[in-house]
Amino acid sequence: MSTAAFGNYGSDPSGLIWGFLFGRDTSAIQIGSQEAAEWLAQPSSSDNEFLWLHFNLSNTASEKWMIEHGGVADEFVEALHDGSRSTRIELANDTLVAVVNDVLHNFSLDSADIATLWLNVSRRVVVSARRTPLKSIDRLRHAVATGDAVRSSVELLIHLFHDQADVLVNIVRDAVARVDRVEDNLLAGRLTERRADLGALRRVLVRLQRLLAPEPAALFRLLQRPPAWMAEEDLQELRQSTEEFSVVLNDMSSLQERIKLLQEEIAAQVNEENNRSLYVLTIVTVLALPINIIAGLLGMNVGGVPLAEHAHGFWIVVGIVAAFTVIAFWVVLRKQKD
Image (cartoon, rainbow, N blue to C red):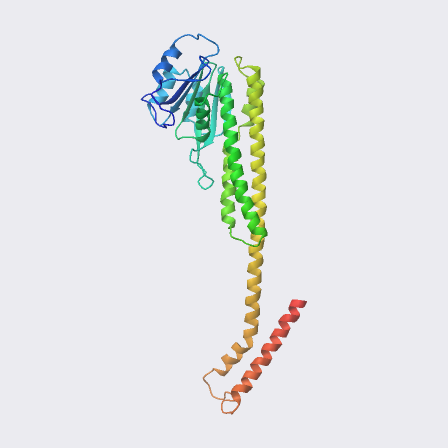
């Protein structure tokens, strides 16, 4: 049995988080790093048997074990240290080397944390490695642990792509629900969301689309010239999984356009409210202009202020101010009608 328990994101001394042997029984058999090394050292006893070994790169011993026992391609080792994080699948010496970006296990639309998963896929062994727990790979582990039948190493990779597409579908659904709520509030006249919040959501979707979308050129080369050991059925399923992935990414693009339109609508409403407030402020300023001018003139501390000694001087000034205010109000109304 494996030294790495189910659900434990730690690893054994070799860096192995979990290992499964397929093809010997109806369901996968969990094995440890020592058993895996012994199995890999022996010649193949059955074409149906293959291993899946998942490593934690935070353990420094994992890379050494993969090179010594896992038979990984040199391109896989180079990819581990490569700064490029674009999702791709390439053929290297009859081995599939895949770099897959996936969301973290505790992903949310507010944090949008993404990490990279590296895979080395041959006919006999699938080696996967990551530095932080990822959601799709854990879904795949759970499916294998609960008895899902996996026919070949390529089918395991395809299963991972399907799980990743399902995770993306759930992310898009959550984003759609949030956008629907904003749209309903907007139509009801309750502008509670800020453009900045929608902008943050849109940036998350753009980042997901940029990092998770596979490179078309590398995928096209693989589908045109697959390795000799890949079955035609696996090739068709790989093509279907990429098409499914493309549909999800197109839905994500449509959602980005919808968010953009909502941002523009919110900006238009904010500008309209600002213009209305500025218009009211302008009217108040115009109506208060006569009293401010007259009060400023009469408040000058100089001699000769008119009506200063008149018994009804105050009421005369009030009448003058009221008259000018009425005239200003009439001018504003006329301008508004025009």
